[in-house]
Image 1 (tube, helix red, strand yellow):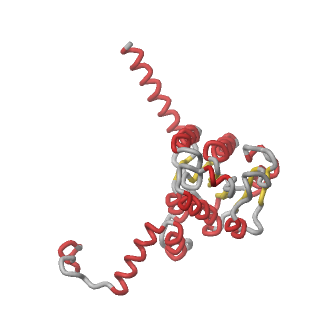
Image 2 (cartoon, helix red, strand yellow):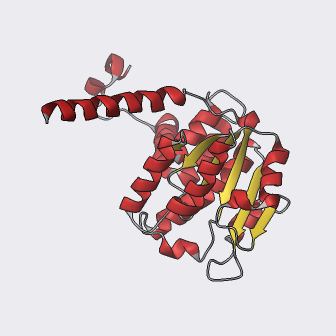
Image 3 (spheres, rainbow, N blue to C red):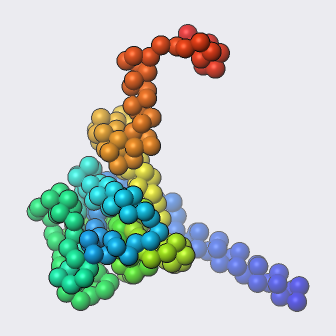
Amino acid sequence: MRFNHLAVLTVFGLSQTVIGDAVPFERLNKNDTVLLIVDLQVGLTNIVRDYAPTEFVSNMLAHASLGKLFGMPTILTTSAEQGPNGPLPKEITEMYPDAPYIRRQGEVDAWDNADFRAAVQATGKKQVIMAGITTDVCTTFLALSLRAEGYSVWANTEASGTTSERIASDANSRMAGAGVQLVSLFAIAMDLMRDWRNTRGAAELLPWLDRYYPVYGYVARAHGAATLNGTIQPGQAAILPGGGV
């Protein structure tokens, strides 16, 4: 039994190595990336249970805004929006009045829709950033289809939602096993920016972060306030580099 147990562990370890080697490190390139907004529909937001409602809506809008922030082609798609799933939020459609908007009438996997495939292929991009509801269906099915077609895929885990944390975890494991990069909103933005000195750097990103990632926005606010109005308080000098000089 011990031998069998060790054999299983060995095989598991080798399989993990193969998976890791099969998906080498790759950085996002804003000039070779398309943003997909997949079924982030007002009706479907009501079944998201792995994020608080207010947090998730903010995450959706932040995901959608990445296309405008970095000048990337953006494609919108919905599933049977005239039914319970509902349309995309108007905040998203107003961001992209001229973007391809594929209203699928029945296909669950967006890649099964010929118009959607054509829209993605027409961009000529090989990297895809995407998010959708639900994580286990709309995000996972499309991400796996895109991987099968040779695309590099980054799934925004903060803007994909589903009915439980367990289901999200299982779906994320399935995608990761196929080489999908599972990433946060902040990680996506920083990888696209790369350098605070770039155009689409600090000047553009700090206001965006203040709106959609206020935990960092308030870092910037605190620094700005200290620079403009700050006075070293008693005791601060002892804890600052160089004694606060």
